[in-house]
Image (cartoon, rainbow, N blue to C red):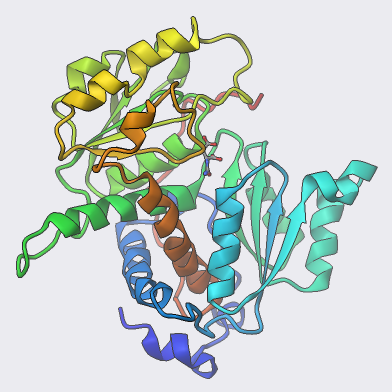
Length: 353
Ligand code: NCD
């Protein structure tokens, strides 16, 4: 995909909304393999931009992106805002704790107020599943799900898969064709899958890209039902560790757990954490990932997070590139995102805490 002309000359851009209606990214299930690979190729193109002394292109000049965060966030919000600025969009930043929500304004009024100011995209994070989907009815802007309750976090899954693909490409000998997708990889997602929107989006994205996904955790932290999930599940981390290509550790979501689901954090670390001992025996080819923020010493030992095979910092860096690609797709000349889609995970979403 060559985007250079459109990226450097915004006058060649067709208007997204006048051509094909407003576009959104709510769930990974709205995308298919080709749409995901399209985003990766675009992110590859933006990598070159990020390395320039002035890492900015005029692709979204005149557009406004609002980050609407009703739940705390550091990296996701900053990542979206950096991505928007690198595309020369204007950025509006809304934060629930400093807003009129505190004065009792409803979510709908808040969205309609921001909409009236004229924004082209809203990135919405909320503690309740389904809010970004609902917000579409209240605004003319494109809506991007920045993480909703226990439901989905589609841009996290895109950046995770992009980061794995990048690591595979880096291992490919020169002149050999690099892997396009994640076919043949064995990935374990370990820990609090039950409360994790990241896990839901990652399962959909990774399996659509050809990987085999294994969920690892105690029963209490796995979804109540795995009906329709294209995964296997086990409570025996040591039993699968040697066969993995990627180990993806999840944060224990204390803010979403309704009851004590764990005996103790020490016990959890011993059974399901990437401990110092496990890290010492881990094959150096096994890629280590975590979406952040990390609880060092709970799901991951400090030594494990800092292994040479750890992609955790890469994930953060690539988050900006992938979000540039998504915003460009939605607001610029990137073409429509949703196609037939890979489907959705039916079972297993417990009620939000
Ligand atoms: C994740 C989230 O908020 O869903 N973090 C993130 O987006 N960087 C994962 C988490 O909070 O554990």
